[in-house]
Length: 148
Image (cartoon, rainbow, N blue to C red; front, side):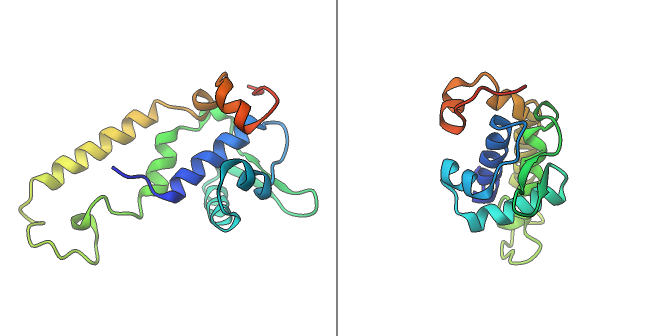
């Protein structure tokens, strides 16, 4: 299974926000620390804000922050939502499916089960568990300790 760039950037962004709880962070800061383009970040920020995962504030002193505590943000939820538009394989696509085996293929059901098991495993992982007390990660993302 391959994770899209959008999901990868979203998780980096959320980890950055977790490492900097208690203040608004900027797109520029995230881009610099997380090695992501500001254009990609803008798209991800917009989507996460619409989903209610982050809160954004416009203006001179604007930025973004988590909309919920990191212990309430499950990684499986984020992956499911962001990966949903991307079919796991061609036969899962509503359009552009040229596979003649789709209606009879048993592999399709096994792949669906495997994907669900993947997401269920990630449901056990919170954003808090990824960041807090992760000294190596915090050294990269934030000089100050996690505030959780």
